[in-house]
Image 1 (tube, helix red, strand yellow):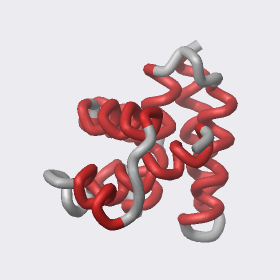
Image 2 (cartoon, one colour):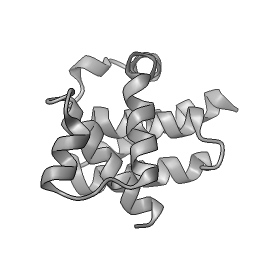
Image 3 (tube, helix red, strand yellow):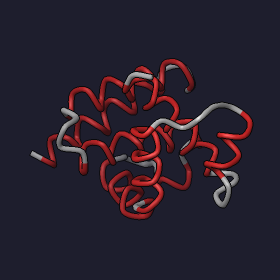
Image 4 (cartoon, one colour):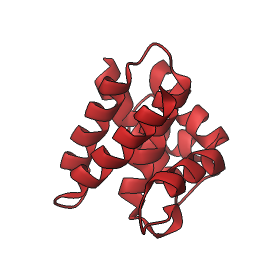
Length: 127
């Protein structure tokens, strides 16, 4: 499984954890597929820093706080912000592009531009 596929798997785990936090990995592996190493690293990293990631979302989103965002967008943003802030081997442009592609696939129409804007601001703030 390549990184893009594992990133999508991590997105599914992060999204699922918004509803069933305790057993997310076990439920996913039992019902869907084995979790890849990169997907596990992303999921565990996001899970351990949820409040910090939400604080970043709150800082850069105008008029929308993390707790008011659609759950799909929240999961995508948490994942991408984690990559931007903590994974030196993933270029910011890759994290942003992958998040936009996830939004195009899973989120509402036009939400990808909102996600792109927030992540662009986050990346500029990290430089």
